[in-house]
Length: 276
View 1 (tube, one colour):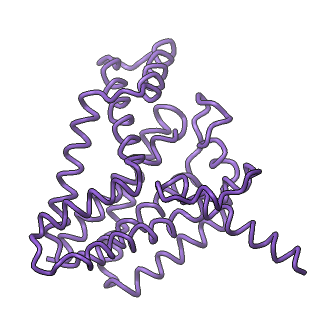
View 2 (view 1 turned 180 degrees about the horizontal axis):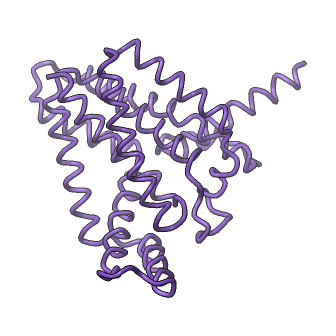
């Protein structure tokens, strides 16, 4: 019985700490198993929304610790700074890489439809830019615009705590949905993290978690607001997924992080208008 309980605890906690290690820079190395499997790594994606909740709680603690008389712009800047530090700018890096790759891929498209022989160089260009550790001009511009928009929206939010919690949880839930219903690109390495997540993330359990999240939102937000949020997120999700499926036949790892960033800012923007 003890062996079963210990194994069950390991099966649950190992993916949880792996998820924290993948999505944040929180010091959880000591809790990671030394011999994790691809199955455990796939199950770590199930914890993405809960890791988002953990991040949200840490950000909310910062907000509550600051004096109530603090300038909203200062509060917003500190919140976004901690936000970036907690995630190690991992998702921002993914966004910059994706924007650079999308711009580079667009540059090789001609006005007339590409032939089959021209499609391959385009895909090679996308992958070359995605793997390039340096950030291009378009990536820098995208990061500047996104961070400025985040600071602006947080500084003007009338429901800051709720907005932060919804943004970090729903955005990582979107990442989970993206992994579950989007194929992994056949042009990338099958040994990469994205490939493992695509194969080993339990789809049925993921859908149950996403459904529970939807029900949970109905308890903290008006029904109309929930459906407006859902509509905006579905539009973003459809466009983002459609782009990568069309260009590369599926997603790449950077696309997950980029989707998290895009979801966060669109959620903050939508909530800003809903709370006016």
